Amino acid sequence: MKPFFLLLLTSYACFSQVGIGTNTPNSSSLLEISSTDKTFVPPRMTNAQMLAIPNPLIASIVYNTTFNSLYIYNSLGWKSMLETDNPNLICKKSGGSLMVSNNTYYNFPLNSTHIQSQNASTYEIISNGKIRIKENGIYMVGAQLSVNNMPSGTKAYSIAVFKNETLIGLLNKNESIQSSTDYWGTSGMMTFRFAIGDEIEIKYLVNNNQSLSLVFAAFSFVKIN
Image (cartoon, rainbow, N blue to C red; front, side, top):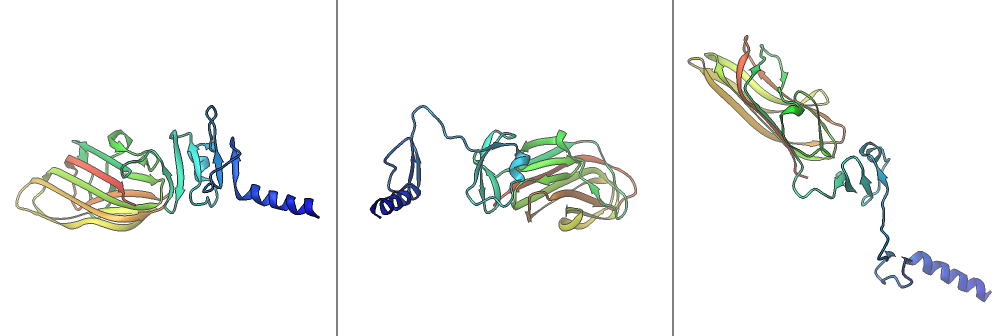
């Protein structure tokens, strides 16, 4: 009976604390790895494989081979350990023309060729004004638009945010009232909660029956939580 009792005690000790490369793991360690010539290697996988993991536990760690970074899973989703600032996306351009017609929304004429700053693990630009979100969280979204030949009269306008083809917010909505053809511009900003896989579109509406000469167009995303 004594040998069996001792075996139980030994098994309990092994499951309470585990040492790899050491016979004396620290009393505060559940698992302690000690080595001077070998490394600890977490699971290695592509970004797609990482995102496909079903119900990962909080504090799960993998090495993402797509973005060459360790990732840890928290309450907001997978987070790169390389990130030191809030992940952002900034696109802008100057010049060109702006398509407009009455009561019609158009996507901002900005795509991957207009990137000024991008965190590729958080955002993917799909097409003009269309972005796919790669991390759960709260995002601040801003946009700016200006032309140099807004016609005289009263023209309704707005800048809108669509999520998965549904309107979720207006960054700005008003009327342009001009006595002659002249410069016009507008901007706006709002905060939204987005999830992995959400497709976001930044769109504008200007009630006018002819194209306008674009001075400047820009949009930005900043993940704040």
